[in-house]
Length: 456
Image (cartoon, rainbow, N blue to C red; front, side, top):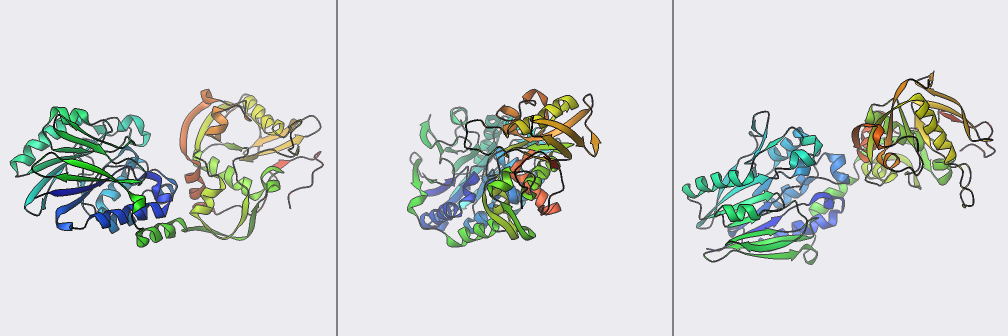
């Protein structure tokens, strides 16, 4: 009997485009014309990363999993992005078998209560044995999983194949999130290695074993056949299939999730972003400082002009404030350097020859400043209500953009970084959940010699 396997991997941020995940689900439904002879497998990184994943800690993937009911899934490096508890939850709620043969934590197989190293599945009159492995490099490339211990995948597969053959498997298939899997093919006698991690599509025979990947982002589904002859693989473009509207609608609903509510418009015109202290500038700066647990936060630019926030504020609204893949970094500097950084914000207001008003400058949190626009100097600076002392040490949170470039904040650079906190998009959602969105100004920045009128 011919066994068909439909394999996806690295769905990642496709959830941010609900129609695309709907088409992936639709393609699986259309190609699964004989469910009794078709299995569905996932090759990891199918819960993260992505904007919606940040907001839902990977739980948005459950809409897809529940609709498709895959038989097998494995951990990818990004499936640990939101911590071990979120990874355990994904495995626990998965409708099929979540495989983990080589990832360990605290001396035991990770999520042992919710995963299994192998699975034997009957398909018609054939029995297929599966073993799932994760990239050995996961602790090195994902700081959240730094203390995960990932054993050699080839050794794990070799041991599992022996047990699966003894248990009656007609075919043995490895589901892998490692990228380069040719070593498994060369050093074992499994029928196929269906992979992920590397985002290029491939389908090759390596010493008689099929090694194949579908590509990333839900654009392609891999159709594999196992029979008495050599395994075959075909890449199916999901754009050619109908949208599963239930899946797409569920993801759209998650994107519209209300995080908080504001009474009265929080405006984000150019003047509210660049003409002095404003509620929206304070909110984003507060999110930076809160995420980093820092004494002060600095922000220049990055907030997008758009319609005001008013009424219900959704995850999508918050991510749309700063729609960039920025990270919150915490730096440690002395007071003299911090004063120079405050001056950098003021000097950023000067654009000789550019068609930019001189009132452009940044936002702060945890600090209060007084600028003298006659000579572009800082004449007053306090942190936590106390004057900045040149020899004191301060923790300053910034977007990674302002740390790795000297476009605006020249006084602080990568050598000053002491830790990475979170993504900025995640920080905005968490701040709004816990404290709402700022609707008033507080006199954080005063410019008594500036002729431009205050923001209304």
